[in-house]
Image (tube, rainbow, N blue to C red):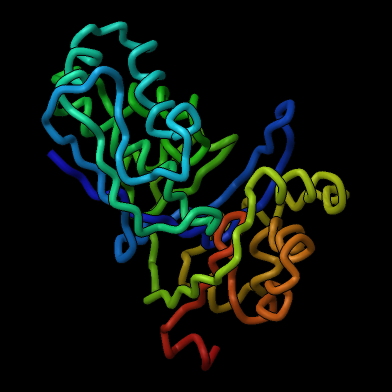
Length: 260
């Protein structure tokens, strides 16, 4: 019983408003399957819900544990607790933390889908996405499994997009960008203008066109904030795009881009 939990890239990310302490966005998510974690359920006898493979994260702060709690609360199905007395969760981590690749959210989504399948909960993708949205803004995208989608609101609105995605060259920098800190810094220093019109324009463009015609620092509203907190990013702002709140950067490998 195992599943892959792929990474994602944000081709663009525009902040369009606020919802309390949350930020409303419009963003193009693409699934990046070359890089993935793996989630497995391993049989045994356990006295409590056990997660193996992420020792640096306390169980109560692990997003997979939060997904387990949310799933149990939403369904009240006793089969969930019974199942995890006889199975532990093993995580094989390949997606680095603080990289803007959605690794934790993808792990949570893979856990929810795997539990739904093997415990026989019968939940629809929409129901799983609603549970996932309670624990992480990116989780619903991974629940649905679209290759590309425009993601809106605080991550709960997923619109599949018939995209044209060029080959992507990612660069995983040895920098940890704290998502909450990057958003908080953006609100403090860079929230003077909301580019709602540009957000809607980008939402209609293919990823290939965005990567070949839009400046990287214009495509992602969080770029300036992330670079402010992690100055190493500044030298990449002209030619490399930033995924999410960083620190992973990427660009198109499509040779035709260099001629446009």
